Length: 114
Length: 110
Image (cartoon, rainbow over all chains, first blue to last red; front, side, top):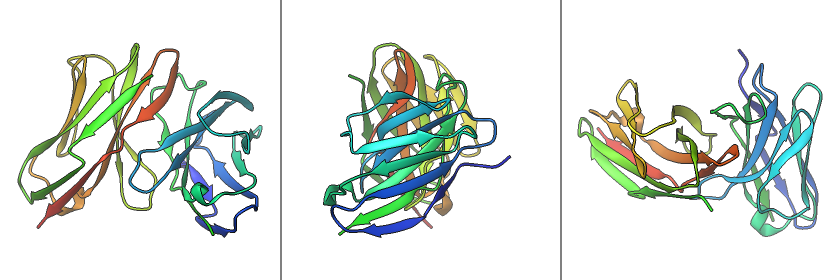
């Protein structure tokens, strides 16, 4: 069974640029959620995708957007990067539209915005 | 709005010194309480899911319990490799999208 993978592992961008982060869900999972984790904080929910449709969104501005593909992999796009966007971005997969009890996380992408 | 509070923020133990981490929660209709372990710079690793008051689950030196207002993660005879941040999260209402606490940073000294 393949776990959740994310790419890239690390990324450095400058303010105003755009970034795309990628996630491959665990085998058999059809739901992907994205989180932002600042240093010393718990993960904050950005949004969730189920069968290629957005299935819930946290308190993040529209410049955070996403996609889910037919193979259930996913992308997180962030436009007009700000310094405060520097964080660990986590992808988690689960099954059955989030009604499964457990989300399994990937290793994360560390984003630094200068 | 769901709220999750973890205590203590940080805990230092000697190897073999058992202790408990606390997760207090306020939710509208608990659908699941989750415990994760997170090593520095890595993604959270799933430990347990609890669904109802009175439920308990164990894994090696860890035991998670649940009441109507809080959950405890008991660590028995910890080893240095148990050092990590332990995260608690709750799912409620119509969604399993969890709300996370800030975590407890555990350091176990040899």
